[in-house]
Length: 193
Image 1: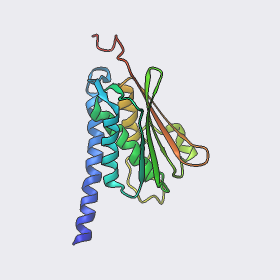
Image 2: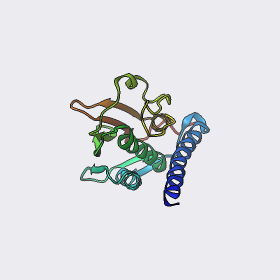
Image 3: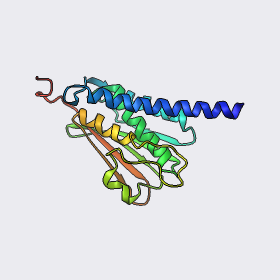
Image 4: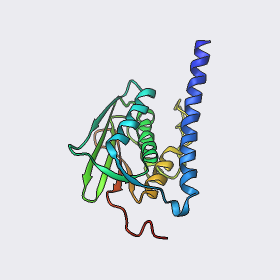
């Protein structure tokens, strides 16, 4: 009974994550020109929320956070950006396969806030690098994890709606790095109809 309850709970949590991703895409796609309501939010709090959520599901992965000395306010929808960070952290834990450590960092890069998620896992298979964000990814043969291939697609959609950029790449020596750049200033033409 205990094992059955545990399996049921894991299935329910997986479904919740899938629904959260689908709702994020639907919310953005149903809005005019994929606009999101942004307000200056503490990026550190968004990262901490995503880390706490991920750590609950993957307690064996050592997640380290590197933040700037000063509070960084970034125009964003905090729930959507937290979903992006959660997706990237979960991808590192699950698809990195051998991942034992993930480092999340935040820094200012000119007029951009840069969120970075680096892991020490196996990296991204070369054949997948060209279509990471198009929603066609799925669990590899022999991979026991379930995936509908929408997590990174959600990330790209959310980041694009924030007028940002996202990139995934392998790190020399092993592991993967995902970078999300969000503008620190609102585009003055963005809210004009």
